[in-house]
Image (cartoon, rainbow, N blue to C red; front, top):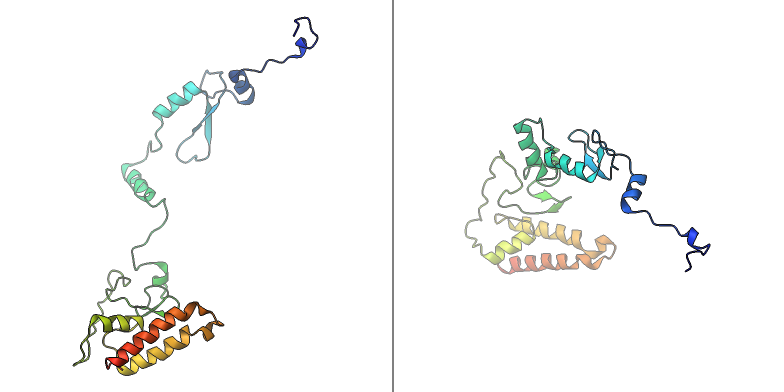
Length: 209
């Protein structure tokens, strides 16, 4: 291109980075500084979401001496750090959740939870602290309890002290509950129904019912 070309006078020089920053950003808020405030710095505890605008040199100086816990007692600092482990969300000890305190839900009835589905808690895991110990169930005299019998009774949601009439009534209840016809033909319950039938048939063959 010729230097005397009329097009040469129309060429615009791209502003450097510092001039662009000065044009787009407010001035640095550090006392006596007139450089552009290109960096944000938090104003501190109690003013979350608010920021100072500093230049690069002054934001470095600010961050070097910044202390979020300045002026806070040691006990409150320790409590804040402890709550930070769980993201400052409320927590409860096992067995002491809101559902249990309200008298329903998980742990409210050791034998019946999950919206009416029977479940077994032999180690009182969901009873929580301070709960009175439950009497240990004992097998009827003359009955030998092996692992297979325990597993079958557990499938039915019964303990080892269950009588023959209890096993039969429990079997009828579970068959009605898990039969596909009771769920509009949904065949996803067939596996559970099959487990119940196999457990009952085994208990029947060993003379439990």
